Image (cartoon, rainbow, N blue to C red; front, side, top):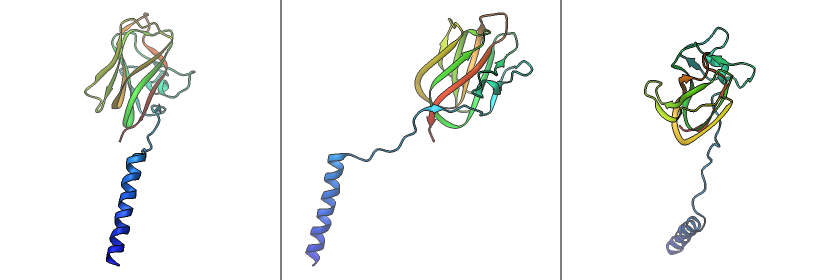
Length: 163
């Protein structure tokens, strides 16, 4: 009886071992990257009356953020959690940035550049970069292309939860 139990246990162990070797480990479910900034807390260096930072993150193309008429200006979003961010889509109004950076942070104090340009041309900018862990994402305007401030209809941040 004891020998039979050992043989059954050994056979079961070998079956598990062979299954793992042949088929590998089961894949863990992972979250697909998606829009992660909609209606999260937003902040800006300045805003014209009625054109608040939150407007740039409400996914409504009829609203926008508009800054003061000076350089530099910035707008950022608190994603309220850690995300693996890999893309930012900007929809500029006619008042766009000629030079700007996309920055990420875990604490809203220390920022890391993930993208920069000195040749912005307005319209829609779809910016991709290596996936980066962040809770905060900032558009940092260095130089305006017009005499107006900076103005964004939408800032869409694409990422996946990264607990």
